[in-house]
Length: 95
Image 1: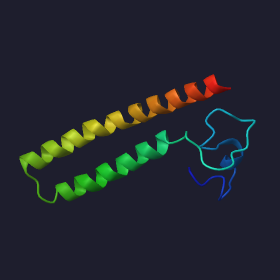
Image 2 (image 1 turned 120 degrees about the vertical axis):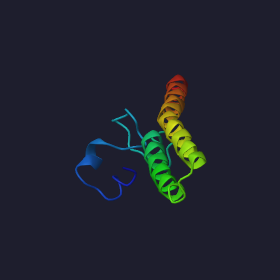
Image 3 (image 1 turned 30 degrees about the vertical axis):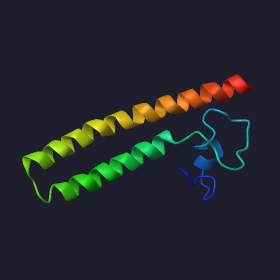
Image 4 (image 1 turned 90 degrees about the vertical axis):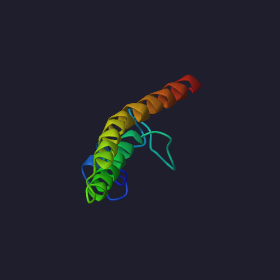
């Protein structure tokens, strides 16, 4: 997702992770939006890896930790999406 514009394919023409809904703009340099999907996918990967490591020593405490991490993992995309919406609203207010 993050390298569509560098390693181009058909998706790179219509989708740029750092532009959100802006289609008439060419992104040059870093962007402060577009981090919700990468954050969610990273958290899922970290949860899977951590769960595998913790399950090597399956105790009740470790299973509780895995359950707590899974619940936290469901909150991550919501929080990041709210942050991104707040940034987009602030950017619209500036223009």
